Image (cartoon, rainbow, N blue to C red; front, side, top):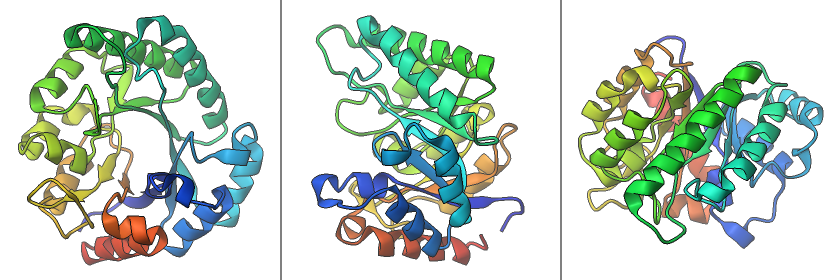
Length: 272
Protein backbone atom coordinates (compact mmCIF):
# COMPACT_ATOMS: atom_id res chain seq x y z
CA UNK A 1 0.00 0.00 0.00
CA UNK A 2 2.69 2.48 1.10
CA UNK A 3 6.34 2.43 1.99
CA UNK A 4 8.05 3.29 5.28
CA UNK A 5 5.03 2.58 7.47
CA UNK A 6 5.32 0.57 10.67
CA UNK A 7 2.64 -1.11 12.77
CA UNK A 8 2.59 -0.94 16.56
CA UNK A 9 0.19 -1.89 19.33
CA UNK A 10 -1.29 0.10 22.23
CA UNK A 11 -1.50 -1.54 25.64
CA UNK A 12 -4.92 -0.10 26.56
CA UNK A 13 -6.44 -3.23 25.07
CA UNK A 14 -5.28 -4.96 28.26
CA UNK A 15 -5.61 -1.98 30.58
CA UNK A 16 -9.34 -1.70 29.90
CA UNK A 17 -9.80 -5.15 31.48
CA UNK A 18 -9.11 -3.65 34.91
CA UNK A 19 -8.82 -6.25 37.66
CA UNK A 20 -9.42 -9.03 35.13
CA UNK A 21 -5.90 -8.47 33.81
CA UNK A 22 -3.45 -10.42 35.98
CA UNK A 23 -0.34 -10.06 33.85
CA UNK A 24 2.67 -7.76 33.94
CA UNK A 25 4.60 -5.64 31.39
CA UNK A 26 6.63 -8.62 30.22
CA UNK A 27 3.43 -10.47 29.35
CA UNK A 28 2.32 -7.47 27.30
CA UNK A 29 5.58 -7.33 25.38
CA UNK A 30 5.46 -11.04 24.60
CA UNK A 31 1.84 -10.91 23.43
CA UNK A 32 2.46 -7.89 21.22
CA UNK A 33 5.61 -9.39 19.70
CA UNK A 34 3.84 -12.69 19.05
CA UNK A 35 1.03 -10.76 17.43
CA UNK A 36 3.46 -9.61 14.74
CA UNK A 37 4.01 -6.00 15.81
CA UNK A 38 7.29 -4.11 15.66
CA UNK A 39 6.39 -1.26 18.02
CA UNK A 40 4.52 -0.51 21.21
CA UNK A 41 2.78 2.41 22.85
CA UNK A 42 2.60 1.70 26.57
CA UNK A 43 0.61 3.63 29.16
CA UNK A 44 1.56 4.92 32.58
CA UNK A 45 -0.91 2.43 34.08
CA UNK A 46 0.80 -0.55 32.40
CA UNK A 47 4.52 0.26 32.68
CA UNK A 48 4.53 -1.40 36.11
CA UNK A 49 7.90 -2.52 37.43
CA UNK A 50 9.76 -0.64 34.71
CA UNK A 51 8.43 2.82 35.71
CA UNK A 52 11.77 4.00 37.09
CA UNK A 53 13.98 1.61 35.15
CA UNK A 54 14.25 2.77 31.53
CA UNK A 55 17.42 0.77 30.92
CA UNK A 56 15.74 -2.45 32.02
CA UNK A 57 12.68 -1.65 29.92
CA UNK A 58 14.94 -1.04 26.92
CA UNK A 59 16.41 -4.48 27.47
CA UNK A 60 12.98 -6.07 27.64
CA UNK A 61 11.96 -4.32 24.41
CA UNK A 62 15.12 -5.52 22.71
CA UNK A 63 14.47 -9.09 23.83
CA UNK A 64 11.12 -8.89 22.06
CA UNK A 65 12.34 -6.96 18.99
CA UNK A 66 10.04 -4.05 19.82
CA UNK A 67 10.48 -0.29 19.52
CA UNK A 68 8.98 2.15 22.01
CA UNK A 69 6.94 4.46 19.81
CA UNK A 70 5.26 6.47 22.52
CA UNK A 71 4.49 6.63 26.21
CA UNK A 72 0.88 7.55 26.97
CA UNK A 73 -0.07 9.34 30.18
CA UNK A 74 -3.19 10.68 31.87
CA UNK A 75 -4.18 12.35 35.13
CA UNK A 76 -7.03 12.24 37.63
CA UNK A 77 -7.23 16.03 37.16
CA UNK A 78 -8.40 15.50 33.58
CA UNK A 79 -5.96 18.32 32.77
CA UNK A 80 -8.80 20.76 33.45
CA UNK A 81 -8.13 21.69 37.09
CA UNK A 82 -6.00 24.82 37.16
CA UNK A 83 -4.67 24.13 40.65
CA UNK A 84 -3.25 20.81 39.43
CA UNK A 85 -1.34 22.10 36.40
CA UNK A 86 2.01 22.26 38.17
CA UNK A 87 1.59 18.77 39.61
CA UNK A 88 0.64 17.43 36.19
CA UNK A 89 3.69 19.10 34.67
CA UNK A 90 5.90 17.39 37.24
CA UNK A 91 4.46 14.10 36.04
CA UNK A 92 5.15 15.07 32.45
CA UNK A 93 8.76 15.79 33.36
CA UNK A 94 9.05 12.42 35.07
CA UNK A 95 7.98 10.61 31.93
CA UNK A 96 10.09 12.86 29.71
CA UNK A 97 13.10 11.76 31.75
CA UNK A 98 12.06 8.15 31.16
CA UNK A 99 11.38 8.52 27.44
CA UNK A 100 14.67 10.32 26.75
CA UNK A 101 16.34 6.92 26.88
CA UNK A 102 14.46 5.80 23.76
CA UNK A 103 15.41 7.41 20.43
CA UNK A 104 12.50 9.21 18.72
CA UNK A 105 9.94 7.98 21.29
CA UNK A 106 7.20 10.49 22.08
CA UNK A 107 4.86 11.27 24.93
CA UNK A 108 1.14 11.12 24.19
CA UNK A 109 -0.96 13.05 26.68
CA UNK A 110 -4.52 11.90 27.10
CA UNK A 111 -7.72 13.76 26.45
CA UNK A 112 -8.79 16.56 28.75
CA UNK A 113 -11.90 15.58 30.69
CA UNK A 114 -14.42 17.36 32.88
CA UNK A 115 -13.89 16.26 36.49
CA UNK A 116 -15.12 19.32 38.40
CA UNK A 117 -17.75 22.03 38.42
CA UNK A 118 -17.32 25.16 36.31
CA UNK A 119 -17.88 26.49 32.82
CA UNK A 120 -16.90 24.10 30.05
CA UNK A 121 -15.39 26.98 28.05
CA UNK A 122 -13.02 27.77 30.90
CA UNK A 123 -11.75 24.21 30.91
CA UNK A 124 -10.53 24.52 27.31
CA UNK A 125 -8.26 27.36 28.37
CA UNK A 126 -6.92 25.39 31.34
CA UNK A 127 -6.27 22.30 29.22
CA UNK A 128 -4.56 24.35 26.50
CA UNK A 129 -2.31 26.05 29.06
CA UNK A 130 -1.28 22.66 30.39
CA UNK A 131 -0.69 21.11 26.96
CA UNK A 132 1.36 24.08 25.76
CA UNK A 133 3.50 24.13 28.90
CA UNK A 134 3.99 20.37 28.59
CA UNK A 135 5.07 20.97 25.00
CA UNK A 136 7.66 23.47 26.22
CA UNK A 137 9.05 20.89 28.63
CA UNK A 138 9.28 18.39 25.81
CA UNK A 139 11.01 20.83 23.50
CA UNK A 140 13.53 21.72 26.19
CA UNK A 141 14.32 18.02 26.66
CA UNK A 142 14.26 16.86 23.05
CA UNK A 143 11.07 14.79 23.41
CA UNK A 144 8.04 15.43 21.20
CA UNK A 145 4.70 15.91 22.95
CA UNK A 146 1.33 15.19 21.36
CA UNK A 147 -2.29 15.29 22.50
CA UNK A 148 -4.62 12.33 22.08
CA UNK A 149 -8.32 13.38 22.17
CA UNK A 150 -10.82 10.68 23.06
CA UNK A 151 -14.57 10.15 23.03
CA UNK A 152 -14.78 8.54 26.46
CA UNK A 153 -17.02 9.76 29.27
CA UNK A 154 -16.73 13.48 30.08
CA UNK A 155 -14.17 14.16 27.36
CA UNK A 156 -13.68 17.81 26.50
CA UNK A 157 -12.91 16.94 22.87
CA UNK A 158 -15.82 15.09 21.30
CA UNK A 159 -17.30 16.82 18.26
CA UNK A 160 -15.73 18.84 15.45
CA UNK A 161 -16.34 22.15 17.21
CA UNK A 162 -14.36 20.82 20.19
CA UNK A 163 -11.45 19.84 17.94
CA UNK A 164 -11.49 23.24 16.27
CA UNK A 165 -11.51 24.96 19.65
CA UNK A 166 -8.64 22.82 20.95
CA UNK A 167 -6.38 23.42 17.97
CA UNK A 168 -7.08 27.14 17.98
CA UNK A 169 -5.55 27.25 21.47
CA UNK A 170 -2.58 24.95 20.99
CA UNK A 171 0.85 26.04 19.79
CA UNK A 172 1.45 23.56 16.98
CA UNK A 173 5.20 24.13 17.23
CA UNK A 174 5.06 22.62 20.73
CA UNK A 175 2.16 20.16 20.72
CA UNK A 176 1.43 17.60 18.05
CA UNK A 177 -1.66 15.46 17.54
CA UNK A 178 -2.31 11.74 17.73
CA UNK A 179 -5.60 11.34 15.86
CA UNK A 180 -7.63 8.29 16.83
CA UNK A 181 -9.95 7.13 14.09
CA UNK A 182 -12.45 5.47 16.41
CA UNK A 183 -12.73 8.41 18.76
CA UNK A 184 -13.13 10.90 15.92
CA UNK A 185 -15.83 8.81 14.28
CA UNK A 186 -17.75 8.51 17.54
CA UNK A 187 -17.95 12.30 17.73
CA UNK A 188 -18.42 13.31 14.11
CA UNK A 189 -18.50 11.79 10.65
CA UNK A 190 -16.21 14.29 8.92
CA UNK A 191 -13.09 12.33 9.80
CA UNK A 192 -11.31 12.80 6.47
CA UNK A 193 -11.86 16.56 6.54
CA UNK A 194 -10.72 16.74 10.18
CA UNK A 195 -7.53 14.84 9.36
CA UNK A 196 -6.87 16.94 6.28
CA UNK A 197 -7.57 20.26 8.02
CA UNK A 198 -5.12 19.52 10.82
CA UNK A 199 -2.77 17.30 8.86
CA UNK A 200 0.28 19.39 9.74
CA UNK A 201 -0.20 18.51 13.42
CA UNK A 202 -0.27 14.71 12.98
CA UNK A 203 2.66 12.84 14.58
CA UNK A 204 1.38 9.27 14.34
CA UNK A 205 -1.99 7.56 13.98
CA UNK A 206 -4.21 5.48 16.25
CA UNK A 207 -6.32 3.05 14.24
CA UNK A 208 -9.62 1.82 15.67
CA UNK A 209 -13.01 1.05 14.22
CA UNK A 210 -16.67 1.45 15.16
CA UNK A 211 -19.90 0.07 13.77
CA UNK A 212 -22.76 2.17 12.42
CA UNK A 213 -24.14 2.60 15.94
CA UNK A 214 -20.90 3.94 17.37
CA UNK A 215 -19.93 0.73 19.15
CA UNK A 216 -16.31 -0.42 19.05
CA UNK A 217 -15.63 -2.92 16.29
CA UNK A 218 -12.61 -4.93 15.26
CA UNK A 219 -10.43 -3.15 12.74
CA UNK A 220 -11.85 -3.44 9.24
CA UNK A 221 -15.23 -4.64 10.52
CA UNK A 222 -16.77 -1.18 10.96
CA UNK A 223 -17.25 2.11 9.15
CA UNK A 224 -13.70 3.47 9.22
CA UNK A 225 -12.16 4.00 5.77
CA UNK A 226 -8.80 2.67 6.90
CA UNK A 227 -6.99 3.15 3.60
CA UNK A 228 -8.11 6.77 3.30
CA UNK A 229 -7.08 7.77 6.81
CA UNK A 230 -3.68 6.11 6.43
CA UNK A 231 -3.08 7.98 3.18
CA UNK A 232 -3.80 11.34 4.83
CA UNK A 233 -1.65 10.58 7.87
CA UNK A 234 1.22 9.20 5.79
CA UNK A 235 1.37 12.45 3.80
CA UNK A 236 1.53 14.60 6.93
CA UNK A 237 4.80 16.57 7.13
CA UNK A 238 5.58 15.54 10.73
CA UNK A 239 4.22 11.97 10.57
CA UNK A 240 6.76 9.54 12.05
CA UNK A 241 5.59 6.49 10.12
CA UNK A 242 3.85 4.65 12.93
CA UNK A 243 0.34 3.22 12.81
CA UNK A 244 -0.68 2.21 16.31
CA UNK A 245 -3.53 -0.28 16.63
CA UNK A 246 -5.66 0.01 19.76
CA UNK A 247 -8.55 -2.39 20.19
CA UNK A 248 -11.46 -1.76 22.58
CA UNK A 249 -14.16 -4.04 21.18
CA UNK A 250 -15.98 -6.82 23.02
CA UNK A 251 -13.82 -9.25 21.08
CA UNK A 252 -10.74 -7.76 22.69
CA UNK A 253 -12.34 -7.82 26.11
CA UNK A 254 -12.79 -11.57 25.76
CA UNK A 255 -9.31 -12.31 24.39
CA UNK A 256 -6.98 -9.31 23.91
CA UNK A 257 -3.98 -11.25 22.58
CA UNK A 258 -6.01 -12.92 19.85
CA UNK A 259 -7.78 -9.66 18.98
CA UNK A 260 -4.56 -7.71 18.47
CA UNK A 261 -3.12 -10.57 16.42
CA UNK A 262 -6.22 -10.56 14.21
CA UNK A 263 -5.92 -6.79 13.77
CA UNK A 264 -2.30 -7.22 12.71
CA UNK A 265 -3.44 -9.70 10.07
CA UNK A 266 -6.02 -7.15 8.89
CA UNK A 267 -3.20 -4.66 8.32
CA UNK A 268 -1.33 -7.23 6.24
CA UNK A 269 -4.33 -7.32 3.95
CA UNK A 270 -3.64 -3.61 3.35
CA UNK A 271 -0.07 -4.49 2.42
CA UNK A 272 1.43 -3.43 5.76
